[in-house]
Image (cartoon, rainbow, N blue to C red; front, top):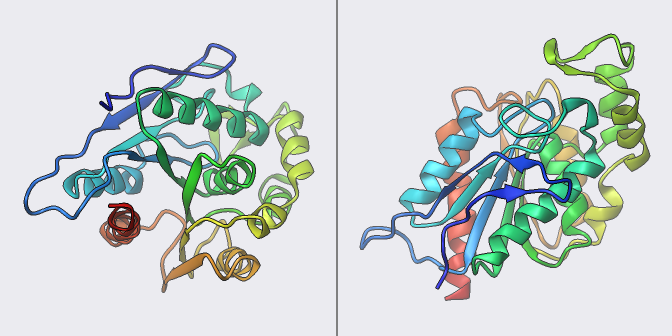
Length: 256
């Protein structure tokens, strides 16, 4: 029997803040696969309480689909130091979250990541067969370009990221991100169902990133453009939640 996902810790012993929702299946919900869980994560300098992420998990619950919404270690609410955050560390942390889900009986994992969290999902999924489907919410593809464009004029050790005092910019973070370069090599290796939801007026991660992701793996990728919508899906949370829920529900139906 599948149990609730309890405390999650990474291999450094840091607690990863997380909220598990078992879903609430009823006669009115779509068919579900009880062995599937949806892991939902934020982007750079973010946390799991972003309204669009909460909306997604609420919609999944209404459809009877279990989810775990979590905050990567070092970000607000989780243990660890933000100064130690890197893309590589968060890729590793995602492995710990999957371990926790598998440990209570979930056999199928859909990962949903926003912005940098989307990039982390592609990079992890390319080498981790436990992720069998993937959703990119305005996900970064050209990682190094984003870092140079957004943080290139800042001084590591002195300046902060996105005007957030609790998120100091470090040389290690930039070096690690630039080393990853882009997700395109990983995306080309993906053979799992993939959904991209991206606003055409995204001010942080250009819509072109979504197009490039789709074009790198067209046979498995569905791109849903949101005309005129920004990076945080302002005023479109319900649309995003419904789109993601339909995608996951279809996976569940196919498995029944």
